[in-house]
Image (cartoon, rainbow, N blue to C red):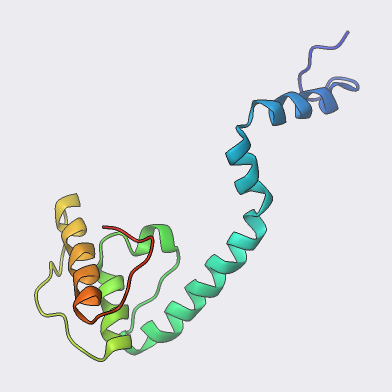
Length: 120
């Protein structure tokens, strides 16, 4: 008797196939190159941390640590060797965090740095 549940005799393979069929094609494509994306993410994180040493800051996760704009601003200041004077130094609200990211992106645009596929 096969119930297509994991752990039943011979049904694990059927369960895996059904699970794969349920996964959208785009999601499967992302899963296929996930190791490459992880390598890129780790490489960029190490590169950021190497530069952020000057500012005595550190990034553990690109997805979360840049979200308030503070480490992003610190990285931009280190790389450009210029100060960004007006930003929220202790952002507590989402709007303050978004404003910091906007300030960072605006600074890059003002420096004539072309930003592709990155938005506020």
